[in-house]
Length: 240
Ligand code: ATP
Image (spheres, rainbow, N blue to C red):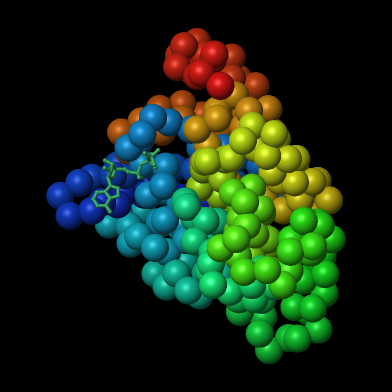
């Protein structure tokens, strides 16, 4: 498998805070990778650096071999990075349909393609289809999360990046959302990079995992190996 995404030696920070101190992460075509680690380890900053919301002070971001480190964030969506940020950030006063259409902005000149994608997303999330005319602010937590994922899919990403999508969701809704992610990966060959606190649940879905600590990669390996690691087990097992 060739690398779709490669983060090489990434350093980044906020003022005096050094959030990332040399992060190396790869995601292959069609691979499902999970980023784990305690609060403040640098998971969100890693995602922000790859989608262009934080500028690295050193290191590189490569997408399908192309150096995109200096490409501004708003242009990375069109290159194939779909980011579902922490806290969803949907537009509450717009309808479900309008939120989805806003996600299609990189394709706005290709109306037929956005219509086809809209149909695919509504087929994937029938609940969103039922609520298409409703304002997004009235959706339940699980539906809002599906909308955030659906909106990212409207840009036809090659890599879907999700920051703690389970936050605030009931366990059944988390299972439903993760089942969708699995389907996307299996049926659409999408690559996924997921930051998740529910480590053991995420490891069941993932191919590989990275554990971050204080801005560095403390551990990486197959999801199976990471799940079996004694240090990981002592922190996460029984916590879910
Ligand atoms: P969490 O699970 O709590 O979201 P995380 O692993 O995603 O944690 P980051 O949010 O990437 O961690 O934070 C890494 C470090 O950068 C932390 O020390 C954090 O306090 C700091 N940090 C994050 N965002 C900012 C900001 N906007 N300004 C200043 N420092 C920040």
